[in-house]
Amino acid sequence: MVTSLARSAVVPAITAKSLGAARARNGVSISETMTDFRALFIAAKQSLDVDALQSLAEGWAEVAETAPPISCTDVYTGLATQAHFQRRIHEVSGFAAGYQGAHALAVISVPGPQESRSHCWTLLAQLGDAVKGQLGGTGATAMYQDSAVHILFPISEGNLSRMVQCKAAIEAVGDGALRPARIKFYPLASAATALSAATTARTRLDSSCDSN
Image 1 (cartoon, helix red, strand yellow):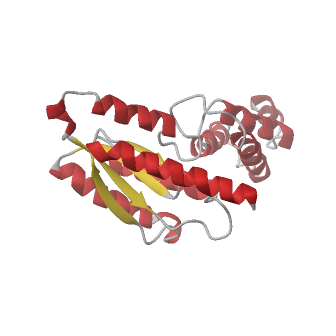
Image 2: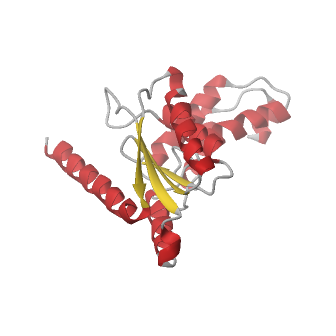
């Protein structure tokens, strides 16, 4: 990439695509990948090569569809993976009984995609950025699954307010593409049950789609 920019302002499509694929294999989100790509052009004092940016995104998307997760971060949203989120629930649930009531689960559901089985990666990246922007400093862990953001958070008046603000931020993503959002709260004792139910429902849906 650096050599290409040093010689000309154009980056070969195969080079950009290879970089995107490598980023996806290493668990880097599409948002961070594109941000770093733009930063390279800024550092080189060159205008952004839009065609190369598209090739970068294509390379990332192709690998992200098939690459197994190798970190605790979901490459699409930048939020926690399902495995990491479940582990956090078990960790918190394993504390002393008197401490369990200090956490709760918020589930913010959004309308499902109209023409595909999942929202496009650009919208998911924006969703992840919106959620992370609202939850900073709350001690919360968030995960996206089945058109819903699941948030495990320490209970406090301030954090409850932040959950509502997070819902509003999600509804503003993509010019309202995820509106209306609905929020439900569950005590920690029900968190694992709610997550398990969501996972079971997704498995049934996948099986139904495959059979059709």
